[in-house]
Length: 90
Image (tube, rainbow, N blue to C red; front, side, top):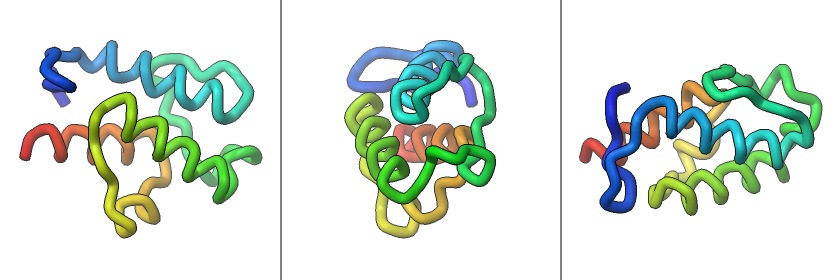
């Protein structure tokens, strides 16, 4: 994905992975390692309520906004990174 300009600061993929891992670790109540591609279908605790919690945390951390279609389409960390990158590229 390359570097991401987030809230005026240039972020590396490693920094993005670290922030996403922190958000998911908190939401899923387990350790998520940076770069781990966590998928919703494989996580028992990633239910609809946790999904909204994760989305809101990502929106806040990366200064992005997800549409309803994007929220429904998020199935994994890869999806989150794709939409974060697309919003910052626009």
